Image 1 (tube, rainbow, N blue to C red):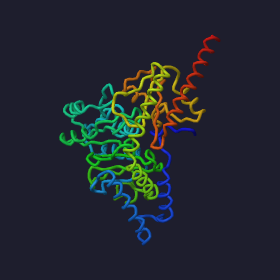
Image 2 (image 1 turned 60 degrees about the horizontal axis):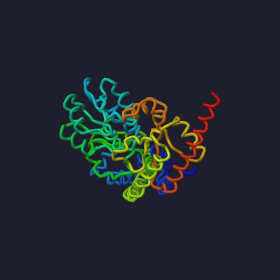
Image 3 (image 1 turned 90 degrees about the vertical axis):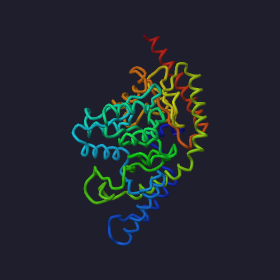
Image 4 (image 1 turned 120 degrees about the horizontal axis):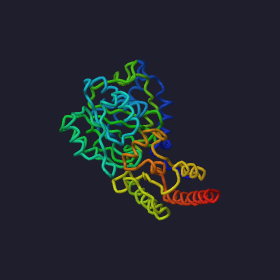
Length: 386
């Protein structure tokens, strides 16, 4: 593929993560829960990986980290646990733009009547004063606001929200799947709950984590053996865990360089696109966003036409979240960002990676222009035939 612009959906496996996975598979394939010497060494390696991830998150208690199969399992674990712990009339509040793995999990485990929605402003951000009002009027047990939008890339004021919730005696959760590997992890340890997924930052699929409020907390979703201190049954995938942690370590050393390099490339791409397509609108364009993400409403033609024709030219883009494409979730999220039903059919998402080059961005803009000419010719031909 000439250029991959769907990094918010998934990322290619980093070479360093692949090497770490192979070393772990070869050297520590034993079951960490067994009692013989080699299994003990595997257990030690697993705990060392837990400590390294805790260090990356700024967590003083590595025991707060529970390894899972990804952010979806981690989010479901959290909300299933809350459903068991809260009184029958207890409620939680989530932002209007949460990823489906948060929204659907909260609704499935708690029910619609116990899940409140926090609106976003015109730029797509949750405002602390709105959260404070929700807390005052409804006393939710937990507030859940993502760190960064997987759709628009908007950065949420999660640090301020975590501090606000702490002063109000309310637990705070943030889905950090899009933040980790793109932005500094500083401060995440101050959140009560954090969820993340390895494949979003160059690690393998099928591995993620849940950061608990304290080391003694436990509400397992998967029951069985005593793994993860009884908080998540099933033999740990140490190779996947080691690869995930290694990938995050690699990305942690590249954050500032990538942000400085990619932001002007992203903005130059937007300028080129707006010149080529008058009427193009960037959703949340005035808000602070991830350096890699552009969510656009094209002035004409369906997003599926743009996607399929760009794909034929070797470019991968998205119509939105891969986890909600074609389902209610995507329309709910984009509508919350100020897009109506007609515009929704013209929304495309561009999400670059650390290794995306200026030439890649320029080639994508040129491919859009080529596809645009083709679509206009098709539209004119259709009108003549009519």
